[in-house]
Amino acid sequence: MRTPGFGIAGGLGITSLGLFFWGHWLVQLAGWEELLLASAGLALLAAEVFFIPGFGIAGALGIAALLGALVLSMTGAGDTAAVIVATVWRVVVALLVALAAGVALLRFLPRLPFARRLVLESNLGTGPSHGSAPLSDQHWMGKRGHAASVLRPSGIADIEGQRVDVVSDGELIERGAPIQVIHVDGNRVVVRQAPQPESTKPMKEI
View 1 (cartoon, one colour):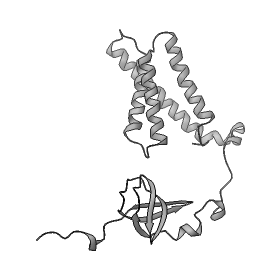
View 2 (spheres, rainbow, N blue to C red):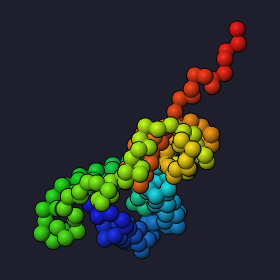
View 3 (cartoon, rainbow, N blue to C red):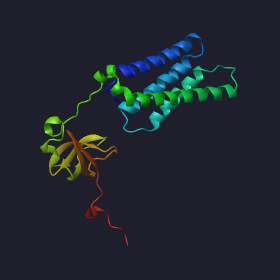
View 4 (cartoon, rainbow, N blue to C red):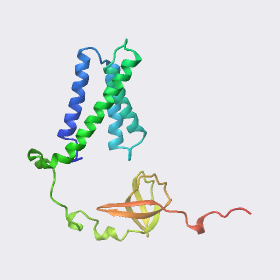
């Protein structure tokens, strides 16, 4: 969150997870099943972060797969239900402690001398020269048109006879559906599906 992209923090996280499973592999607590389950969990989380907007089924399944891999790698074939439940609690408590430590690190990281070089502390200006929406795009704010292509979420819209590159606010919008510009941020023109005009709605049969 403090250092954009996949850098030192992401590398340390993946390395720590790999060392955990490697150590359990050496003592024959983890096998191919646990490694495949953990890999599937990481793949689902990566898909949720980079390809699927929002947090949904893929993210929940990824977290569940990782938790399952951790628990399975810490239990054996002859363990009782009580041992398995205790192991689940150990994993959950460890993750909660790690989450609390991560939140504390996010709070105090910018104050540490060695970490100040990793965090951008200068403020960004406003206006077209600092990444705000250019004047040529600002006038689209509030305008209506229709989707010239399917928006999933990006695509092309026809607004006042002009083709404009737009992105929806997260929902899939079919081609030809009425849209309205709700936000202009930098070079992104964000739209949402507008309600059907009353004059174009089919009349109810009497």
